[in-house]
Image: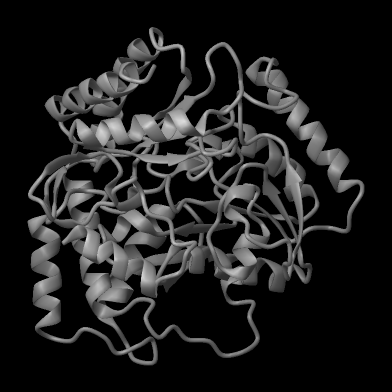
Length: 428
């Protein structure tokens, strides 16, 4: 049956639509931190539909909210008052830390970043954008144009002029050997030099922890230091929290808070985990920025009642059960367990991350050369052992991405780490 579905998939869907595994997997149902495939095999899910099943599969609170809302009304568009949308916007505006915040809902992180770019360029009347090397911000035409990862940038055409800044990858590049403080200083100097050669940009967009780039991050405080330079010139800071938001990093509710010395971002985007699988994205911005557009706009599907009901139920569950704290505690144990394993496996260059957002970079032993074949083999071996993980990385997709639902417990973390250890040790 799976082979038949694979054939049908290939006959009707684009060739560039990626599938994991040599024998692709059809997931039929899930519960908690586990999913099952069409053959009845059970897996511990350490990727959550690309960090989207944030709390748990089939979470009763979210399922009930969706079911009850579907029995009333599913959709009406933003042309009508929408109580669940207003209620979720109020909660997010308050949690964002952005003063006088306004919230606009979209259907995805791509669309959220696209909207943020529209707002920033309209507000600043500039189409120049600063982005980070190794970054990823979505698959729309504008988002692809600011993506600093060649594996996810299918065209060099863009409506924007993009300039790439150093700093998103701590352990690679010309500043890797520096101390954290010296690294930040060097990146700030590079930013100042770059700004001396161009017209004033609209904004810097940055992921506090780069997602598709392999869960890489700069030292805490880098974007705060950048913000001093940007603020002097009126340049906006857009924090892309599509993968880092909602407490996944454990230490903070938002990734930008690790760089919050000089205040919150001007614009923040979010998506993925807030819907726990329902299609929600959005933008938070200061009112003067959000309200700068001088023409009408709506969203047909952004903020629809059924997704907002899911988002509210999911956010309530996350806060009431302190899943941020759980990500910090269980994630810390998992990272240390994986680092102990990695110390004995020569193909592992680095285990990095924070909370339940962990990257394992695979290289050829004794070098910094990416080894995507070995990374793919480890991913296959982990599946054979009953564990699903992701892949990423800016150097030829050789980083394994580990991002379980935030309700992961200690026993499941130990089980997943043991499977990963066996997978890593099984590769010659």
